Image (tube, rainbow over the protein chains, first blue to last red):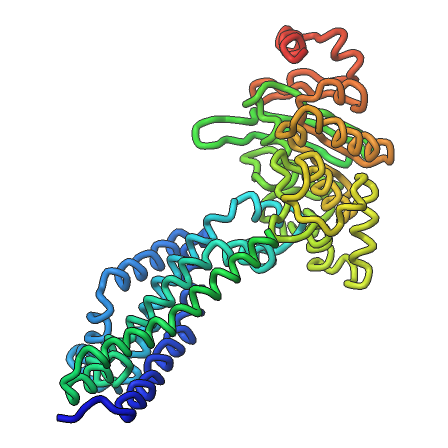
Length: 216
Length: 242
């Protein structure tokens, strides 16, 4: 047994890079996919709408833990292929992000009045131009608070990657606490770091909201 | 050849037949006002002219070109036919200038350097040159509707459609919008209006079209139509509209 020292402190911050890396990966692949899902959900083709809705429904209904298990432990069983842990978590977090952000953004897109599309169409704009210049900017503003809310969820959700062996923030806290037999201090630190990570996001979202609000 | 030719147009929404064989010609430079009770098919007819709704049978031609929702050059067509709505439908996230210049820029009608001048020009025509940098929500209903008209004018349309453009306005704001429309009429713009403003219909329009139960019930010059309605339906409509 040893007492909590600077090394433990450093190890927590080193572990933070996995937390950040997982969030970045999830957004990098998940956000474009989310946009695709959201657009599919408001498409005029019923088949596409239905498929996207079903996909989102399935992913949203499975716990994140289940997604991680499925892609890491399930793939060798069902498909007979060994999936590297990093690939498995990337796929799981990407799908998780895509499904939730996709639904949030769909809500934002649908909250913009149909007449706005029509007004654009009547001026001779293409469907893409209507989306890009009229609908999306208004939807973005409406979707901002829940989007940031999800981002905070995602940051905290990366702690589940520890079960596949990723020593990210939460897992590092566990390790330090086991080594020092001082659970309170490392876990309090872990909580403080999560808080420090999420607070600026929320503040940034609030300022962005205020700024976009003036331009509406 | 008339600018707008409507031949035996039928349109059904679900089980309701809204247009039951409408035929109507509008000549270039003509101001045609469509009146009638709500549900008579006025607005639907207007939306069909702009291909916002497609007709079930019959045909509509504008400048000789057959109009339907799947026409190959729908976007180009819509640039020539402007429409102004009851609810203005300005883009709330864009300033007045950008509301006006967005479509001309995106469709390549003008270059960026000339955009502001275009906005100033059309805003002057609706008497709102000083509002070029305002947000839509800072404007009154009447001003918003005039910006919506200016936005249409910026596309230099050959024909303008007005769908009850004063119906959502406070009574004291109706006049300023009608004045703008009257000025456009004097400049020779071809206009088709659906309106409840009988005064405007009487004084500015060349022709009144009375629609009833999905048909053109009666039409003619305003003086004749208002003084001597031929059908009891029009007579009772005029009496109730007073």
